[in-house]
Amino acid sequence: RILHAAERLFAMQGYDGTSIRDITAEADCNVAAVNYHFGGKDKLYIETFRRLLVDLRDRRIVSMRRDMSAVSDPSLEYFLESFANAFLEPLVDGSRGRLLLSFFANEMTGNHLPKRLFLDDFIRPMVQVTTDGLEQTGPPLDPMIARMCMMSIVGQLLHTLKGLPFFSNPKGPPLVPTELGDHIKHVVRFSAAGIRACAAPMEAS
Image (tube, rainbow, N blue to C red; front, side, top):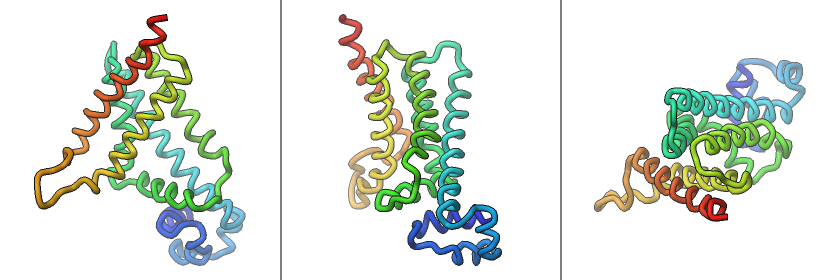
């Protein structure tokens, strides 16, 4: 109960805007229980973020591995579509992924998490899975270029997720497609061409 209450309150109000008493009131427990199980507000905040992070990471990895094992010879486009769906689905289905987005937004102006938490518990495992998929389905790439390609795709997907509402045009025809699936198809097509272009210098040499 403590972690569930902390997830919602920290995501909504941020670290500074949430007190231990706010959390204990929602979790129907006392301050001593928080101190006993988590050692105080700082450690509770870290554990709450880490739990959301690991849940999102594992959901994405399971989804991608399931997709990649479902076909015998996946194409680059198939892998990129799998990645795009695995990236976006937890963030748009009303699940705890949205809480994590709020955590990220709060942390942009705060500094309450260990520097290596995000890198070690999330970035490194995801980089390994995505670069393995890119190596399996795409052209030969320098490892640094491969990581930059995947980082560029993440940027496109985040922009789509957060920026799409600003392109709505209720008084006229849409400026861009309104369906998320149409944007995923575009990101896949655009990114596949970019990845192959990045590989061209290596293939030429």
